[in-house]
Amino acid sequence: NAGVTQTPKFRILKIGQSMTLQCTQDMNHNYMYWYRQDPGMGLKLIYYSVGAGITDKGEVPNGYNVSRSTTEDFPLRLELAAPSQTSVYFCASSYSGGLGAQYFGPGTRLLVL
Amino acid sequence: AQSVAQPEDQVNVAEGNPLTVKCTYSVSGNPYLFWYVQYPNRGLQFLLKYITGDNLVKGSYGFEAEFNKSQTSFHLKKPSALVSDSALYFCAVRDLGGNSSASKIIFGSGTRLSIRP
Image (cartoon, rainbow over all chains, first blue to last red; front, side, top):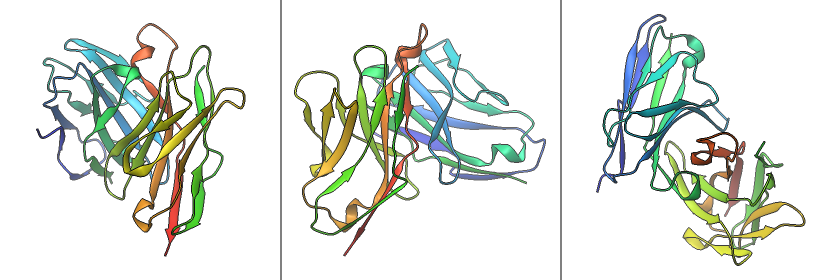
C-alpha cells in the first residue's frame, strides 16, 4: 500500500511555463485535495474533489486547474507559472471527507524563476 | 464561518516535561476537530480527531487532546515530551459552509514545537 504518491519531488519552472503535478492514491478514497504551503505558513486549499468527475474550487484556485477522471488520480495543472506560485504542494486523500483523517503525499517543491 | 486559531507560533519545552499546544475554534453547530503533525520536509500526518463522545481523545505517539465546549478549545497535550516530538503541529476543523464544504477541513496556522534535551 503506497498511500498517496506525488511526482515530481522538486521542479524549477521559468515564468510563463506550464506543468502538471501528479497525485495518485491507492486507498480507493473518493475525496482528494490539493494544498499549497508557503514557507512558514499553514496550508491553503487550492482544489478538491468528492469523486471521479467532480471537482470544486478551494480558497486559492487562481492560476490552477484540476481534473478527476479516475478515483486514483488527481493531477494539478499550473498554467503560465508565476513567482507567486513558488511553494510546496501537497496532495491528500480521505475516505470520509471532513469526518475523518486526510492522508498526505510527500509534497512537490516548486520554484518559479 | 468555521475557523480555528493557534495563538502560539512556537512552544518550547524541556524533554520529559508535559507539553500543551493550544487551539481554539469557532463553529456553527457541533465541531469536528483534528490535530496533524508535520515533520521537516514531510507531508502532514493525522494524530487524532474529536467528533463526539469523551472529551479526552487519545491519538498517535502518546498525544491526547482535550475538547472543552465552554472554552471552545481543543488543546493538544502529552505528559512527557520527547526530542522527537519537535515538529509543526496543525489544528483543523471541519468546514460546514456550502453544499460540498462538509468535505473539507480548515487548518490553523500551525505551532512549531521545540523540545530541548
